[in-house]
View 1 (tube, rainbow, N blue to C red):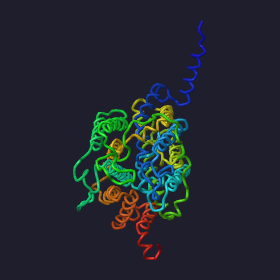
View 2: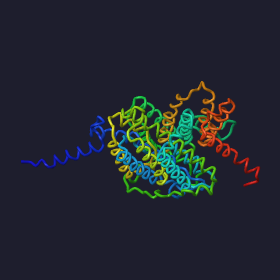
View 3: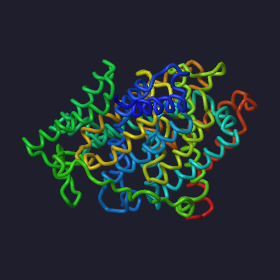
View 4: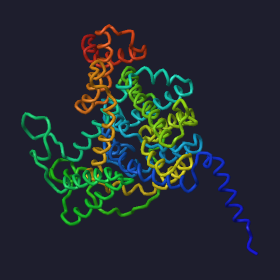
Length: 497
């Protein structure tokens, strides 16, 4: 007679998992949770490819890339991106028991790259040190309850405008990196379409095909549309390079020799697809090194900017996911809200410590919830898949700009959708929101957009006799931004270099 011991063990394990994650009480099953975790991973796995192409391809102000070299090491960035996302998503599932995945935040990584690492004197370790500092501050704010004060200090329309502005900033980065928008060789206009006002070259075709395919898949609600688009257009790029021999835009000395060539990697089949991951980026940060480089005032503003974007995105995301899953209480709060916020705050610091930028909650988790996920088991599945993805990092070095940048444009659109939350008829909030949105892409500075919006908001309240309606924290923040904008005139007046 066959033994029933293995069956009992499986049933016992199933029961323990069900009990730990409260799967049955939340109206789900183990199968649904696993399926939901898989869907969430494939919906947001694009970040393992996209993050290296944003932060890994840019040198800091000293000309050094992430990892300390003079050339990009995209495989290292990809491996660490997947590692931090995997560990923090596992923690979210086990500690907070919530179907929410975390990874490097888009928008935040662009800000760290273009708004911090490229400031005069700043290095990548300095920039990542500010991310760690921001994460630690958020953790303290969550533990002390001060987050509520910060949350209520900034008007909702300005919070929305920050997200929309970052979306447009990401979009222009995508269009410029792809070569769709370029600086003209001569003429009165600052930018133009393609080369000489025309779309030219096979790489441009790859971008257009990638963008249109992702758009079509999004409209048809295809799961993992962005990842599929990146992979599909990369394959197309590899085939075109093999048949036509397009080559790169620059020669080994970095001089432009082929305007219609590939903008980053020349797409070729990799010599290896699976490799032992290199986690050399872990711990490559300088917590307070930036103070001697850019000054305490600039450090405060930059940390505050990171904190602002990270802080509010998380709160909105966890509420949205909780609503989708039907897990909110009467006050609109998800279960284990404090634990969710603590894990997310630690993820911000972990992203900086791993030199892959702040990690935050992903709204793409809604795709897994749509497949039935209701508990942290789904996050455990997603986290394990991210850890497995660390072995596939070599594939990232194959992806050219033209195959990856359509994703930036689409993400920009998704962030732009929030603009409907601004009351455009109310000029005293609409004008600051507008300045916040437009100055980010047009000045290539997220800080400039936020600062202008805050200062003008307070100024209009004073002009309208509503100064008492401005939260004390907004007064302080706006005052610091005034100092930030006036730093150069102040230095000139005082004769300081």
